[in-house]
Length: 347
Image (cartoon, rainbow, N blue to C red; front, side, top):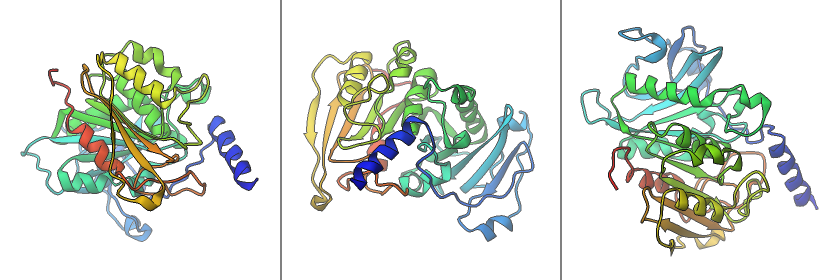
């Protein structure tokens, strides 16, 4: 009975769009300029004693360029419209201003979270350092994203314009391969990733969603968009965004695959591959569904008995979100998919 009540509580909170996925944030110094860079720190005392390098205005307004002091992790605050926006960026040690342009991967948190919160458990920063891509963890206003749902409060937040600006800001500031910019997200962040890919097709080479199927409320936007490489990682026992979908809200996981395979012009049936059960005691099994004969690739990792979770690394919340699979590493699966996609690729 207690588990059932907890389930009802989580569903109620999600339906009301109240932040439920609280995540620990790293301490940040207060920005004093339109765009300020602070070395990222997990220690409050260290952050408070840090001198803030300010964004420098060169050939472009400060809002369109940030001067990073070098490689490393930095918190950035800037004014966008009437709001102050924040993101954390990890620039790997292999980065060079005069070297090979690096891919850029955005990682979007779930409802009630923050950029630093998802950074702590996603494993994307560590992978970016290892293989060589820049990782950015933006924070939504009030812990939420305007993912297109019919919510009057969220409708006031122009996240599409903000992310268009953010990519311009970063490509003006760093040596980024503009043909290899990607967005991934967990839960509500995954929902926004679908919307960003559909509305900014000239910006994103591919998108990935973890624990969120395709929202029905953005279908018209995506119907009008060109083909888009899409990766979905979803658990069959997800109680927040169910595998079977939500009536008038979200497609089921199979419907999501069917939608994108049709949208991308796939001509053959999907192939199914059972991933190695490398961690038998977690109670999960992962099946990969893949379409290759398409204008753009479509793939899903279905996690049998998996919950509303990020595979391999537990999601740090005060709620039981279900089983976390250890058979795949979400960060590695996402990057393996992304690295095959570029904006200028010819099918």
